[in-house]
Each structure stands twice: as C-alpha cells, then as structure tokens.
Amino acid sequence: MEQTLPDRVDVVVVGGGFAGAATACFLAHRGITDILVLEAADQFGAAASGLNASMIRQVATDPVTGALLRASATEIRHGDWADPVEARWNGSLLLTEGERGTPVLDAARAAATAGLDCRIVDRDQATARVPLLAAAHFDHAIWTPGDGVIDISALLWRYLRAAKRGGARLVTGCPVTGVEVEAGRVAAVRTPQGRTACRVLVDAAGAWAGEIATLAGLAPLPLTPYRRHLVVTPPQAWVDTSWPLTWHLTDDWYFRPEVGGLMLSPCDQTPCPAGPTPRDPAVLELLAERLAARCPPLANLPIQTWWAGLRTLAADGRFVIGPDPRLSGFYWVAGLGGHGMTGSAAVGELAAALVAGGTVDGGIARAVEPGRFLAG
Ligand SMILES: Cc1cc2nc3c(=O)[nH]c(=O)nc-3n(C[C@H](O)[C@H](O)[C@H](O)COP(=O)(O)OP(=O)(O)OC[C@H]3O[C@@H](n4cnc5c(N)ncnc54)[C@H](O)[C@@H]3O)c2cc1C
Image (cartoon, rainbow, N blue to C red; front, side):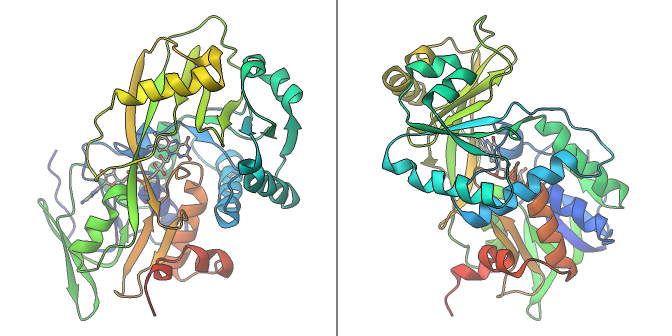
C-alpha cells in the first residue's frame, strides 16, 4: 500500500529487521520519537531476521560480542516489556573437539566469571541431556541453561510496537533509493514514495548496508553477506522437545527441536551478493556427509522444508555500530552476523544511546565503532 511520507523527521531508520526495529524501539524509549522506519520489502523481518534459527546463544569467542549477547539475552528475557514473547529456555550444549575448541572453552570460562550461568561438562554429562550424542565425536560441551529458542516474529514485533507506541512511523514496501548530503552531513532520503529530510540516517539494512552507504557517497566498510542453510525434518517420534539446542562448534553443524522434528544446519558460509538467496542442493549432501561421519543418528533424516538466508559479517567478525566519521548524521547498525537476533536488545540500546548522545560503555563502543576500518 502506498503511503505518504513526512516531509521531515529527526531520524530515518533504513531497514526493518532486528537492527532497525531494536534501534527504533530504544530511540523511542530515550524520547527520540520523530522516527521513520523504512523497509524495502512488503513486510518487516523479510530478510535474515525472519529466516534465522531462532536460537538465543550467549557464549561467543569474541569478548565484546559475548558481553553484548549476555546483556541482550537478559533484557529480552527479563526486561520490562509490554508484549510477551514465547520462548523455550531449554539451554544450549556447545560441543568442541580437540585444540580448536580451546578458544571457545576459554570464552565460556570468561563468561562464567562475568556472571553467566554456564559450565564445561564432559561427554557423559552432555549425553545424559541428549542421548543421541553418544554416537557423536566431541570431547567437551559448554552447558548454558539460560539459552533457548524464541518466537522471532513476536520479538521483532515487540520492538516495532514499542517504537510505534513511542511515535515512530513504520513503512513497508518503501526502499531508500537515494541519500542527499549537504554541507558534509546527511540531509534527506529519497524513495519511490517521495523525499524525507532528516538529521540522522541509521543504516540498518543488513546485507544491503553497503549499498545505503554508497548512496550517501561513502565507500562501503568491509562487510560480506554469507549464505547459510537451515533444514527442518517432519516430526520424529524419538525427538524429545526438551532437548537443548546443540551446536558442534569445531565440526560445524547444529540441531534443535522444532515442532516435533529437528531443525539442522551444516553451518555453511558461502559469500553471496545481497538479494534473494536461492537454495543449493549440494548443501544437503554436505550436511548428510558430515553427519554420517560425525553423528550418524542425525544423517539422512527426511526433510520437510529448507531455506537459506544471509548472515552479514564484518571483516573482524564484530558488530558495526555507531557514527561514520566521514559523514555527520550517518550511523551504522550492521554486521550482526550470526548473533543479530540474540544481540538485538543490546545492539538497539547502544545504537540509540550513540544517536542520542547518551552515556555508553566506552570500551564496547570503541570496539564496534565503524571508524575502526578507516585508515587514519
Ligand atoms: C540461516 C541463519 C540462521 C541464523 N540463526 C541465528 C540465531 O539462531 N540466533 C541469532 O541471534 N541470529 C541468527 N542469525 C543472524 C540474524 O538473523 C541476523 O544477524 C539478523 O537478523 C540481522 O538483522 P538485520 O536487521 O541487520 O538484517 P536484516 O534482517 O537482513 O534486515 C535488513 C532489512 O533492510 C531492508 N533493506 C535493504 N535495503 C533497503 C533499502 N534500500 N531501503 C529500505 N530497506 C532496505 C531489507 O529488506 C531487510 O528487511 C541467523 C541468520 C541466518 C541467515
């Protein structure tokens, strides 16, 4: 449906996935209410935010990412929100084998020291939780009882509704096609539905974030979209819906209960241009081969549905949040990689604080700032 855009707003948020929705929500929370969220697709969450595996996982090898994930998961689960979001807090088991597991085991120890309820368990303890792991190759597992699986649509709409209640205008089917710059600062966005002047542009366009920067005359930052597939089986009588999400971090596969069956991924990571993500049947062979070798009970299960989405990663794997030093008023909230749903609350809070000029954790803000990729 064509909608008339306002002539001027304070902040335009480009993109209606977790990055844009959470930023708009926390901007509104801070009293910045003159916000326009523009989403190119006909619905919010049409890209990575609607195609992900719905897993809240708090242990990450990178300490900055880990801190943001822990803060975010706590906010999502225990924050004071008007809209409830269904979740199954069955916990997670992160499996490791050999020396390649050392960094994540160290990260789990650091996370526990920082207050996360997580501990390293042995094969027997992990297998007691998920019996089919008796056939899997691994040495250790990290058990995090507060991890889980969440209704991603409800979470996205929790942010969007909160933003709307705070005054934000939400528009779908409206791609930003131009960015006007005047006297070294963002001046307006152009769309097929018209032009809106603004003081601030938040680039939350996921895999397309580089394209928005280019529209503003900025050389893109080193962000690369990578395709990943998810596979869902029909219901299986032997699946226990109370199993935790189980991710073999050194073998690259994961599974979790999904509507009586399982959701699985071979953790494929193929660079792909921003845009539609056609499925690649070779990935099913990859998954079957890997599981036949590493966890035979999961190999060659029937498939009910499968799809692919884009995880957009910065060159150093960290989120990219904050002002672009080359152009006043241009803020990035991008590079959320494989953690953007879990991290959404902390990402939105940090982005909103930076736009509003509020107090932030300086160490974290510096670690994720876009300027880290710009020489000098
Ligand atoms: C297969 C897969 C599994 C994943 N599993 C998990 C998981 O279990 N847990 C987790 O925490 N994370 C997971 N992720 C990562 C998570 O989904 C992403 O990090 C997150 O959704 C990124 O959100 P975003 O808002 O940055 O991007 P997106 O959701 O891609 O949103 C960007 C939006 O910008 C819009 N846009 C683009 N160009 C324009 C334009 N010109 N004008 C207006 N709008 C525009 C797009 O249409 C899109 O809706 C997974 C990702 C994938 C692909």
